[in-house]
Image 1 (tube, rainbow, N blue to C red):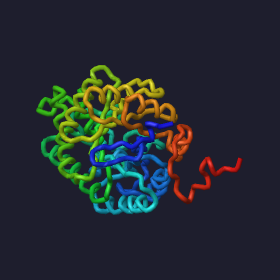
Image 2: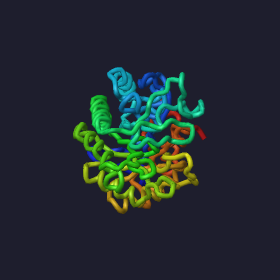
Image 3: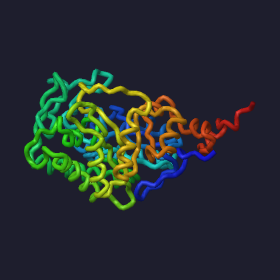
Image 4: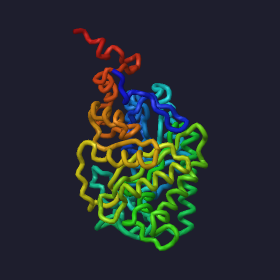
Length: 361
């Protein structure tokens, strides 16, 4: 049989061997923004998975842009050097394409790591002042962020551009602007978190203004060999929040500015949202954005089974699928998927004795 999931796909100047993407998944295991031994092992394992693209977790553009003290950053030479060591090792053992997600946590920053509760850091716990489009706390018990002024906005644009330049120097094939999951750029886009009365608030055109300004700065900092994409939200799952029509408007504006793809996710803006998570629950958002804007899209969200992933791309609902928890649970998911879908996937020589055909009996 001929699998669509295992057919090649091109995003901008980058060719992917197949349409399986390992989603950027926060590990909360960095030190002062720098990658550690955990990242060597974690990413090294996933680099051998057979996926077409491996995305590095959300990586902050400045120290206060981290979600937690354990988050990766790309704002110092030390951060760049540490991540460079990881990239160098990955390149030596795998030809998988490598991507990185560039991010700023906004009002969701300065929090504990999830396994310690994930709540806002308190006094004496290393808390820092967060920044956002409007001084609205993430939820009860969280401090109000400082409202960004024009000087802050200029600094943020510079920080995103500088992190992009560092990612280019490190040799990443794909760079992704994070504008979802309730973080800073998403906070500008949603009318629920952006109450500004200047040119960056109000209409959808105004609310897109700053994220698009950031994207343009990242684009200008990129080289011609890098695919620049974005992660966007298809829905806030709250009345008065972002809906698919606004997602389409944002994706279309990004496409006009040279964006090569969008990953369409949802939620994360407010813990009050009630989301019914089930297989394919976010694929419909990706499908609508793809059909209306014409930009290549990546679908994500409880995509766990090979037949399910194959159906999504074969039916034209998305151009790529991203795996997160499923590939943490089974780092060889693409090998299993290829076998189930009747496709041949090249295994590392060191592991070929474990291919299905090599088993006696």
